[in-house]
Image 1 (cartoon, rainbow, N blue to C red):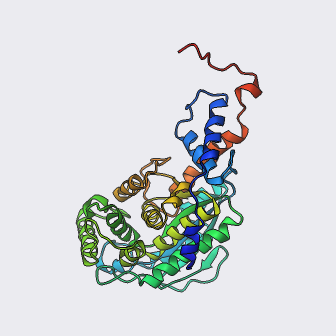
Image 2: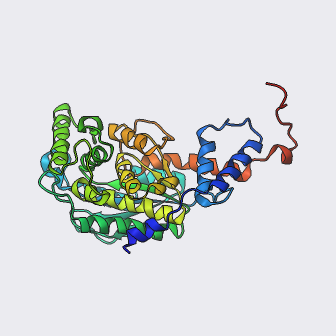
Image 3: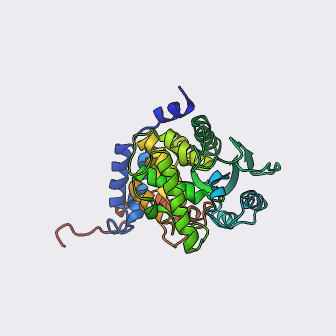
Length: 358
């Protein structure tokens, strides 16, 4: 068996007994039933993931920022030069990016993984050198990756989950890669069957003409690989055709975390596209996934709707890096802390609602 097959085989559905215990416990806490809204059901799901109530507190947390370049950049889908990917990786490692500021606020560690940057990076604390290839190929001219490269990138993500999950109780997806929203749109269209114009956004803030061109680039790539409006291809084939190395690695991170029963907070459109890949490989892997936020990218809303996930934060963010997921981390931690620390009506000596009154 491959590492992907072994990992998928070890992923189990959420534990129904633990989820019942969590719902029963929520009903006995000193608050009106349902008064914590979405956070209550989140705590129930995380109990199901852990197989016990209360589940472990999702701390400490670790951010895995997967960095890679994209051959489709040659099609002029963004005004930003490809060199910015490596430059931003250096910024992450120096602690100067938004992800670093948000991680410091949340008490999370940041690890950057070079999965496919089109430059040789210097060794630095916090950098994992796991390069599969120096960028993908242009998906409009042929497959972005070979199937072997896609498989190896997914397996690298699984291995990173195993490494970080040995010390962290919550994993957070991050990404960096100029032109990665183009590949994300292609993946989302391929897995949802939606047309390119529905799922292709403005990325770093492109103008109308570039946006229209970007949509046509996505359409061209999908048509070339037979992925427009539905297909019968296997998940790894779709991933190899139009995905990015960071998408593959994030999909692997989701699978690896699910096998470890560790929750994953998904960031924006890149993570949403990757989660579609993970779900296609193993639907039960979604049990521990939390949509940290709703990105301003239209493809992200389509992805999380297809995944059946409800975002915790909606602030019109479109930065990536893991920033939106980090903002949601305290909410995830608070949802679980309620099960650990809030008193029940019996233990606090608080009267419950009179069952005979409305």
